[in-house]
Image (cartoon, rainbow, N blue to C red):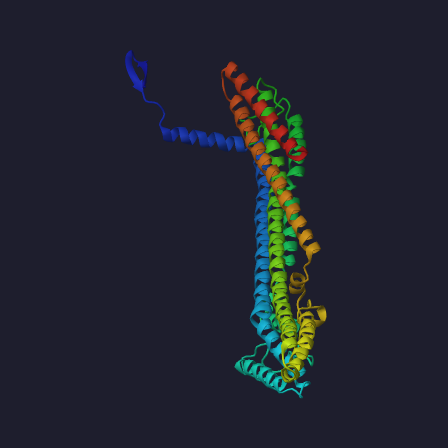
Length: 444
């Protein structure tokens, strides 16, 4: 409303200041307060505190990316190795063992040249092996030529696996541990950088005390400033002190929360990597074990057929026995040699075979290795849960510290003494809860 005034006995009205003029006055007051050394110090320290926290957050994000890259590389490397293992020990090893077994049987039957039945069976097995080889001629497979076959007719599966892995050198050279180390180093630098807030806050307090002592008795700005000053000789000193403590708590918890967040991200990635290794090891060892089981079954079937042939020949005539007994004897020797073929072809690759260490680790996994991987995966999962709980509690502590800062600042600005006391009590409680939650985050 317009205010009335008398000028020369005649009532007149004087309009209120416009919004534009009030804005101009506010900007002038802000410029005047920023010219105060204490407010300038507060502005500088606020910016200096924000910079390491922001840089630490950016480095923390980079560390998380490095850990996720390590996990992706681990999964990619395991998937590529499993595909090569499956191809060699499933698609190629089974037909190769069938060929090797046919050639061994033909060789044993040829030793029984006095039996027409043995000669016929030898020719059949030799022709079968030749036809199976002819079907793969020119395809560069395991049975194409004699590159992978040994004199005992076995095939060198580890060498074949090494050649298959060499076809994709980029996948073989993947080093997830390098990404893990890069993430750990980046996380360490992020935490150290964010810890710069500790000396900055301590330096601010020392400079603030020194400035207050030097300015005793001089005119001071009544503005609370960007960061409230605790050393003030007025009725709101307690509120301003609580506000400063809340700001310090808010600032000092930030590096701890960053460390907890990085720990959670790292342990989650490590748990996922160990889970991937565990599943890949189980699958790889299962593929090799399946090949060995099928090959032994074929060898045992031949042995059973030999024993059955001999049992049937008990009631046969002398002529029939003379023809078929050599075949039974050859099958018995073939079954024994086939067992040795299984052990030779199913052996675990070594460093001399040229297979990369990661693939060898997948194939060499036994029960003890699986138990160790399972324990490591569970341990990292528990560490991730613990770090996640700590991260959540520190986030809540930051939230309560922010509430305490807001309430304390509000308490220092209200004019009603009763309301000021109420907001001051609430700000103390909020600050106390923040400190308790922070302590509990590391004690629990």
